[in-house]
Length: 345
Image (cartoon, rainbow, N blue to C red; front, side):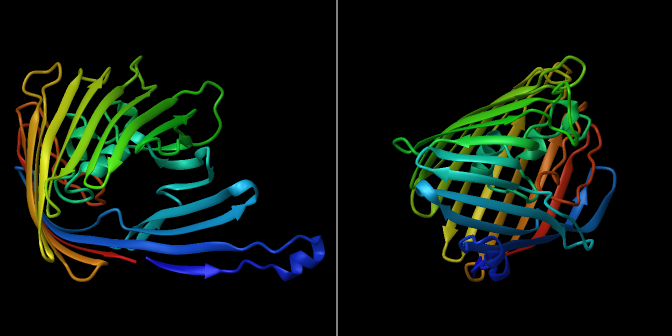
């Protein structure tokens, strides 16, 4: 990331309103993450180019009275593959931080989603854990269905405590996860997490619930952790228990590992989605890959993943942080071979 420090001095306004000049640190940053993928849903296959959570963002912060700091972020998805994008579609918020902690208002990831991001060995790539935690057996990714977590809720209010002995508590409230005003607070949601992090170790427990449809109030309990066995070898794992969701309760669990060898990193993970109320509705997902770093900002990688669906299941391998996905076919395995490039700036 490259920081551009701008002195926001408005001479004309200062003379008109007799206010002191303000100074802010402004940062422009982004990520270009694209891949060439051979995707197969067990019936059809094809070669695609996908832009994977590519973004352009702006951050600013200003020190104010009382030892406080005001900050803002505007971040949007950029479709490098199709020449499109959506303004402020990703984490976009304004907030204040100080000795009391941090408060934010806007649209941003929930604490439950943040846990998955810390332990996922293939975040935004083929084999992302969200292929199992976020997608219903019908293959839909509609948040209103209720079997969808790892969301970025609208109208969010978030409080994060200061660190207490390396513990941090987050709570996120959304009065209405939809556009426009509300008079009944339909789709009200809560998400919270308690995390512990020191160098080489991370562990967290999170809980999330929101008002769904058809009388259901989907909720999920999630546990996630990673541990650096050595400076080069990391193991990770996650468990999620989802309840009051269409089709019945479901558990998702698995482990991952990565090993660094100079500029190369080998990685793999294996996750399982148990059956819900329907027989043969589970799946397992295995993904392996290798990264090659070319400097601190550029990474090339290759990954292969396969999701093995039971007869009544239709989980993907290409969902989760990816703009190009291939729908799964019930009872058929979904697989993908991906060659990717990620450049951070």
